[in-house]
Amino acid sequence: MDALVIRDLRKVYATGVEALKGIDLTVREGDFFALLGPNGAGKTTAIGIVTSLIRKSGGSVSVFGHDLERERDAAKACIGVVPQEINLNMFERNDHTLVNQAGYYGVPKPIAQQRAEKYLKALHLWDKRAGIARTLSGGMKRRLMIARALVHEPRLLILDEPTAGVDIEIRRSMWEFMREINAKGTTIILTTHYLEEAESLCRNVAIIDEGRIIENDAMANVIGKLQLEVFVLSLLEPVVVPPALNGYTVRLRNEREIEVEVAKGQGLNDVFAQLSAKGLHVSSMRTKTNRLEELFIRLVDKQERKSA
Image (cartoon, rainbow, N blue to C red; front, side, top):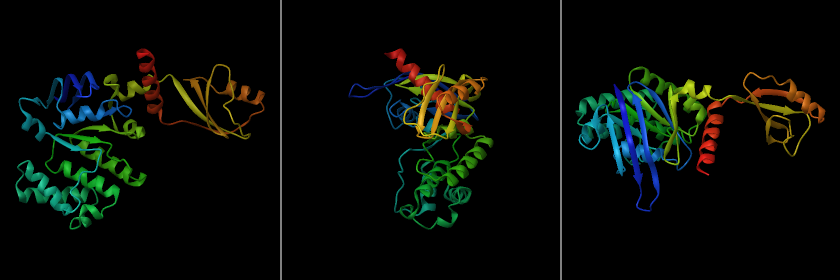
């Protein structure tokens, strides 16, 4: 079954800005799906429409078979959302935040209290249950928002930049929790600027730019389209401009590090030889691991060239 089906979705704001230009998107039940794009691409607008916070200008949205216009309540009941901005009641008890949220969806109070305990414990917030959100750290506020989104046990969880401003240790524990709930059947849509999150967590990905979907495929297939590898080379000699190498794109990271683009499967012997001929010697090297980020930049650049 499809968790989310978007057809020809459009949004034109009163200012004349065309934020969405007829996007089509299908997310299957049980998927862990990445929706990526630069700032202003249309991600937040699309999520706002799906969660009924923004009115669409055209097209259709259905959530687990419920049309968002004709069956709004049924569709919304299937969705839990963690917005990009922290929007907690800062003076409400943390466990009450979850119980009250569950009440909006008709969950009886005894069950809501059980679920509040369940999700506060799962997100390592149980010892903060009697406190208020105002006293929580930024990472704890993010986790409380995730618990709040899950307390009515939605079938689809939408995470809009859920780990923004969260340190790496907490981010990794949140990743593990997301994997666990996805493995138990919750469909997840993730938007993030930490692109290594998407590559690590998600099975399918859509990339949106200037209101259009420019890529939509399995993560493995999308990554497979990257025909270049990027190597980071540390130099013994400092440089102030990237050295010109025949047949390669070179970028300067700092005075002792350069990035070199090499065709997939091609060795680095020629690169080393050209550097040596310029009096430059490599002390160490590594592969730039964030392949999705490299691909994302290329796809957006390609789209911009098409539009030019």
